[in-house]
Length: 199
Image 1 (cartoon, rainbow, N blue to C red):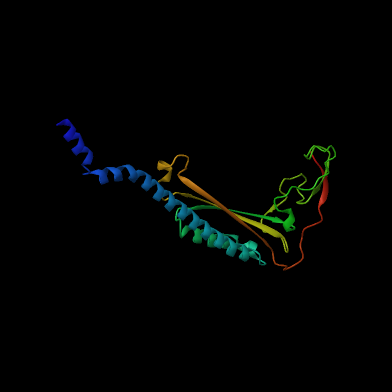
Image 2 (cartoon, helix red, strand yellow; image 1 turned 135 degrees about the vertical axis):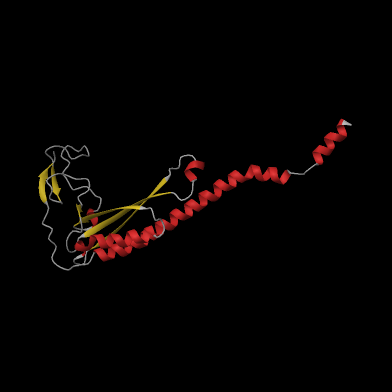
């Protein structure tokens, strides 16, 4: 009798699909939300890249310094069309040429320890009187200057992946940058770099 009962229970498959779905549903849901979040972030990044390229080209023409707010508004509108609550931060740094971008000012390493120590001479490319890891000057710069245009976008994730996937934050941050040279609308006002001493 018990043997027949156990055999019939073993063959009974009623409710098996529901049980299997209940086991797989959480994993499926997390996977789908993760894919939706990834796709949304990639699309927002593409919109940001396109808007930055357009804005950077508009920034290189003469007189662009007076229309900073309008140029930044173009990028803001393009990104907020995808993420209405996105917060954008803009930064422009100018350099006399492309090779100076994010490169420390040259110095003579007298004691050969790899740092600019007190008294060692350095080339003051940005004219601020101190040795810098990045010699860029804030703003548009002058004619023929290379300008690094960086935009940081921060927004709340539209999908609740932070609650479901460990290690994810509720906000997401994108950063995109482009470098263009200002049009040669005049003579560059950059003076020859001065020589200083490390402190």
